Length: 103
Image 1: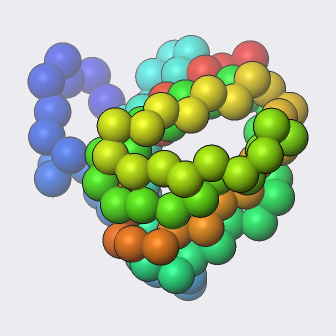
Image 2: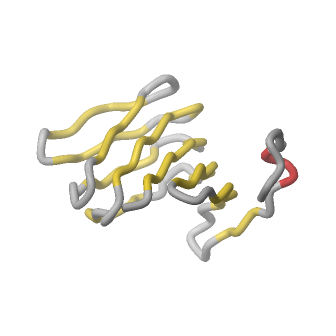
């Protein structure tokens, strides 16, 4: 995508079997992803080879990391260095914005 200004509505949405929907804006060394997560979804323990920042736009749930359990809601920001495990439970319909940094 080479446009400097885009609307999320103009980015194709991919929906997984679990109902999680993603819209991805790729860059050369990073990607920006809007994620819509239905209430009741559980993301099991996992990690990524890339560094990741996640901003909670709306919704609520619980984040689990090696540092313990943390309730989250709008305005919460997560930072996961590469290979850092995390898991989450989503109590309400949630919208996240992820910034994924290439390694």
